[in-house]
Image 1 (cartoon, rainbow, N blue to C red):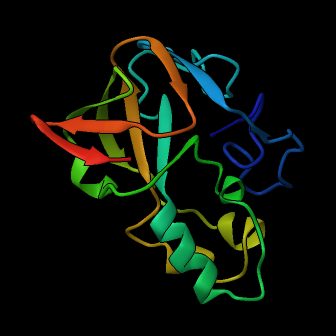
Image 2 (image 1 turned 90 degrees about the horizontal axis):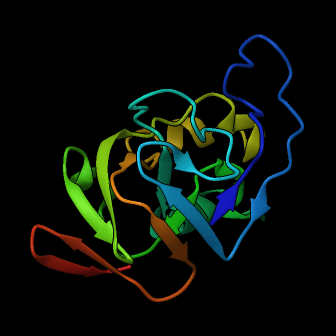
Image 3 (image 1 turned 90 degrees about the vertical axis):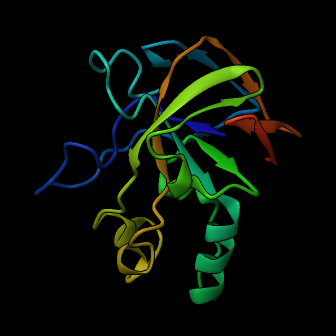
Length: 159
């Protein structure tokens, strides 16, 4: 899981990226309707569709295999939570629960041109359609790294 106190790419179009550190954490505090405490999008705006972002470990593994010369952490993609075993695109428009916290999948987290700089040239095109999931936080709680279950429509998927 990752948070950052500021924006390195968002809002920097036409200029250089910011220099805010990306912090890998073992837990994050999700605040309903507001975002992740300590993250750059916390209290960004009412009903913001990207209060939290998710990315698939399996997609990251395939991306890394496609660019074998690159050795980087999934954190460079600037998504908050890395999950395994879930089709994130299928959660768009769905309510789901992770570690007792309810979320609403709002949109595909479309890859942008900055990924060609942050990961490797060609990463934006490679990730088209698989950039992750933006979501709203519906109930407050703490997400922790480790085994968890994602509950969707009375169906459980391993995360």
